[in-house]
Image 1 (cartoon, rainbow, N blue to C red):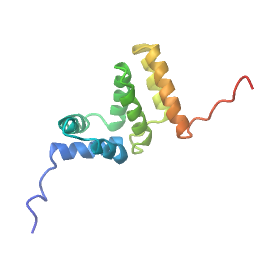
Image 2 (cartoon, helix red, strand yellow; image 1 turned 90 degrees about the vertical axis):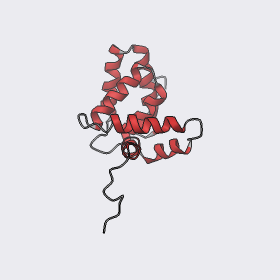
Image 3 (tube, rainbow, N blue to C red; image 1 turned 135 degrees about the horizontal axis):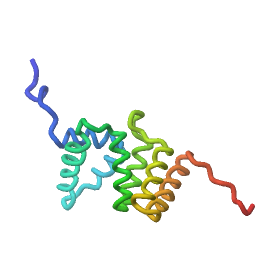
Length: 145
């Protein structure tokens, strides 16, 4: 005998949470949910249902293409905190949607033309720090030494 809920499709929130965890990772989502409160809970629900289900759940574009787009758009609006979050998620994502440092460099290079050199310069600094933190980019020797 099957239960009543066994054949039930996930709610928009639950489907969004699956996508959100897949793209951003459990640690980031858990941290975000731990910071929910009476003031921001409705916003968290809104982005989970709409951004993570309605948009990231659409079948036409894969996660890797969406990662390229999101990083580009975040640079375009100079949303650096979100940019850093999505860079980290892109480097750590599932293999089929993971971006390499080279991929991210190309996004920033293109953004220099379409968004502006100051935004790209700042993005290079942010990503360089992340890559060094992860041991993916060695420190350069001091040219004065």
